[in-house]
Image (cartoon, rainbow, N blue to C red; front, side, top):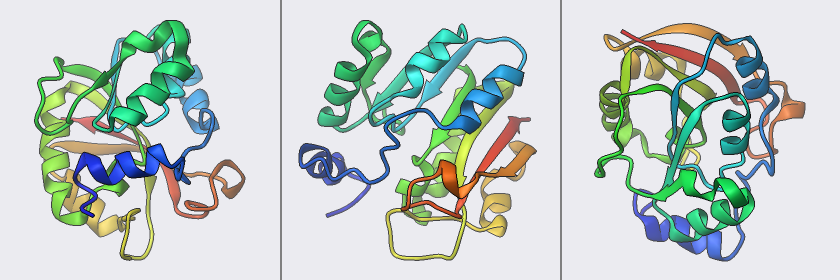
Length: 194
């Protein structure tokens, strides 16, 4: 099955085969929100179970979380209860998501895409973020392998973001804060939109 199609993810969510699900909010995000100034609008693409929606909301952000798997959206809405309205069934690349956003939160979305789709991701992020906006989150780095996940290299990141973004933060995520699938591969990064 093609991982760029909703059906690929739908099968996994229906069978609860979701080893990328942290069942909570990464400590790196909480730390970032505590030290970041202000709030605004945030997009969470490929939101999966969307645990982060509650955290963003508690910090005063207006959140739109999207996924193109109906089962993922149903799961997220059930988890979020009163905040379920923040989750929408949508295709990141094809649908009108509104915006521009102050922040886009990344966690396991980019690495779910084959490298051939990364330029589309970079262009779409540049469209969706306000000038000075932030693409912030946890990015997977490592050896190229058959995925998903598809980790990237420093050179791939430079190619992907050059011209539209500038790297402002880059810290390794402790293995104790990662799932086994991602241990030793994750880095908290903030990319500023030019």
